[in-house]
Every structure is written in structure tokens, then in C-alpha cells.
Length: 162
Image (cartoon, rainbow, N blue to C red; front, side, top):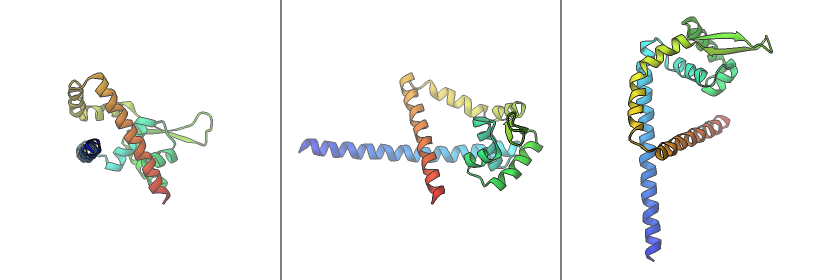
């Protein structure tokens, strides 16, 4: 009987820890959104523009339709976003080499350095945090975050299909 109550106590502890992690992720999401708003206001980018620019920087060059899909933005909205980003020299639209009718969007590195500077404080704070963890713990954190991102991708797609 003791082992059953220990299993139950362990399950409760795991649920509490899981709830703490979910709450911390929500808080992190809020803080990153606030940071992004501050950065966006410094460089005159709307939140959706900054989000799309980040998607292009991470996954580009991309077609406008792939950008719309990855950013969760309606394809018609992407045109206006790309117009603003291109006008302010954040991105360039180029013809694809193999299919001249297709367009790819690429982030421009000069402007990216400007963003890197604005995110410098947060990057430095993250680097400082890494020193508090062993290589094994960092690998576990990286694995968790990658798997959490993948789960978010699956759930976003499921909601989009409803």
C-alpha cells in the first residue's frame, strides 16, 4: 500500500512541476512579446512584421506563400507585410533561379545587425544563464524546447484544420 501512495505522491509532484513549467513558459512568452514590442518600436516594425522577419531570417529564403504558412498569416496580408519590410530595407524579393516566375524573400544582413544589437542585452543575459547549467542540463533544456516547439506546430496545424 505504501508503494501506491508513493506513486500517487510522485504523480502529484510531477503534475505540479509540469504546471510550474507551463506557467514559466507563459511568463517567458509574455516577456519576449514585451521585448519584441520594444525592439519593434525602436525600428518602426509592427509586431507581425517583426514576426515575419524572424521567420524569414530563421527559415529563408522563402516564397511568400511559405512565409504565410509558417507565420500563420493570411497570404493576402503577407503582401502588405513584405511591401513594408522591403520598403525599409529589411528584406529583398528575388526571382528564383530555377523558375523565374517564382519569388523568394531573403532577409538583408545589414538590417539584421541592427536587430542583433537591440537584442544584445537579452542574448547576454541568456549566455550568463547558460553558465549555471551543466552541458547535460543544457542538452536537456534544448531537447525540451525543441520538442515543445514541435508540439506547438502540431497543435497549431490541428486548430487551423478545424
